[in-house]
Amino acid sequence: MNTNNEDIKKLATISPEELAHIGEGALAYIREIDGKDAIKMLGKRAAVPADAKLFCLFNANGSPISISGTHAAAIGS
Image (cartoon, rainbow, N blue to C red; front, side):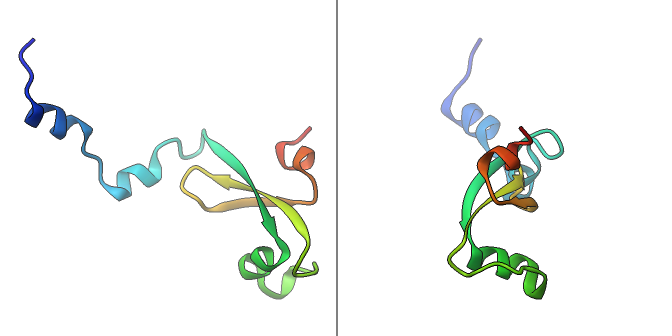
C-alpha cells in the first residue's frame, strides 16, 4: 500500500462539528462540578449551595444530561 503524509493528513482530518457528534447517544462521561456550575446550567431551578460538590453526566458532545449528588448516583448504581 502506497501512502504518503498527505494521504494520512486527509484521513486524520475531522471538523469540530464532526468531532462533537462522535459517540453521540452511545457515549457519555461524568465530571465533578460545583454548585456554581449547576446554577449556571439550571438557573433558579438549582436549589444548591454554590460550593456544593456534585457530579454531572455529560453527553459525548458536552451537553449535560443529569446532575447528581454522588458519583454512584451519576452512573446509576
